[in-house]
Image 1: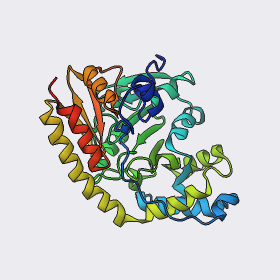
Image 2 (image 1 turned 135 degrees about the vertical axis):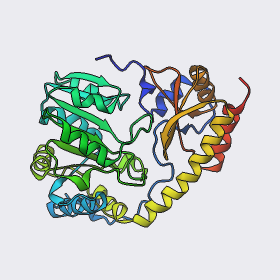
Image 3 (image 1 turned 90 degrees about the vertical axis):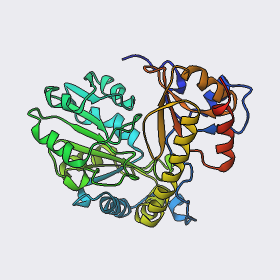
Image 4 (image 1 turned 120 degrees about the vertical axis):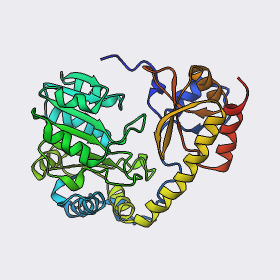
Length: 337
């Protein structure tokens, strides 16, 4: 695997951005991550969540609420974890595969995590190619990061049913909370080898909470739970997760607000002459030959967007979180080249 040469290839690296753009306007506006800029409101937490270890029953209660929120038929199918990145790093060790086919472009940590344990990594461009990828695992992000490509659950279940080869099937639904329609796979479980990943980092804007879930057949979920050991997540994460996942009113309001925001962002990007090629309610992907120059112009103005080493003509824009942020983006984005 190629080493990660550019530290800004992962979103959210504001200290690296400040080193690169030492004279940039402050505060930096981070549009690089695809995280809801108006997060779920953090409630007042009791002292006990900070001063004592979580009880197993409390973790089980959170897993039950997550099962209901995501539509899993049985709480035993849900394993809570300290963020899905931990699961991405853990699963190649826990369920070794001779090879893994990744629907690409994709979140780069999947290829790195499997390659680190000696798994042969194959990248494919089309969903249908996964049927012929041979024995081993497959990885699908749905909606996809970074282009927002999405597949309904029926299409994916038909694909998994048609696969002649076994192996681990990872479906990352980190951006699925804000989607309409029948996209999530949790209601279709158990499916042999299938592990669905969900997170509070994106739609709920709680990336620093480090709370995610693996959803799978009970025996797979039990293996993941055992590998994580006792106290896999913190007391504060349990308390906030219980409230956030139960608050469907807040999520629906966030979806409505972001639908308006993304329409505004689309209009601004088009006015800048950028070609929209994909996205979700939390980010937009554009293509332009001027991407490197625009990245640096925005950075000099204190605005960090996402660039890509394999596609230097791509940039990904998150959603500004305030009117002041919108106005700051408009200046360097719309100024003549």
